[in-house]
Image (cartoon, rainbow, N blue to C red; front, side, top):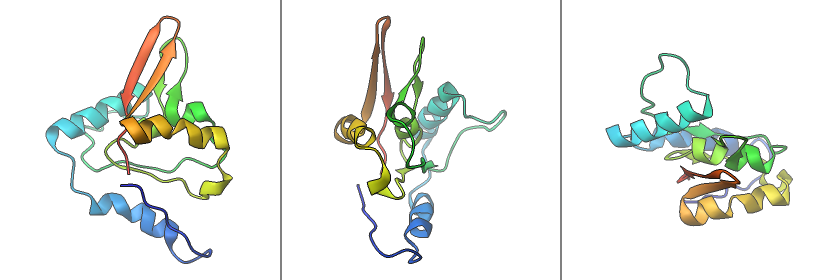
Length: 131
């Protein structure tokens, strides 16, 4: 589900958004393995962290680039914030401040639930079903 919180500064929109993962059910074994795998491939999994059981919460800065949001890199692409939020929450605070190309890069993940990164040597598909 996609949600837009609107209101004046200081009314608790960010605080409410940060609480959303706590309202979501814990990840099942297969979901936890999938989310943990994504975080491992991205290089953000802490050593000896074990399976990620809590739905992830990602809040990229409004100055983030499209590749940082959807993923990229060469020679082997890495998942971006959209995939790191898989089965959790992707929070775009100050939504209007994000560059238009960044917002447009989220079209595929929102419609298909995946990010596809194509390179000359092949393509990578990362799951990206987030709220």
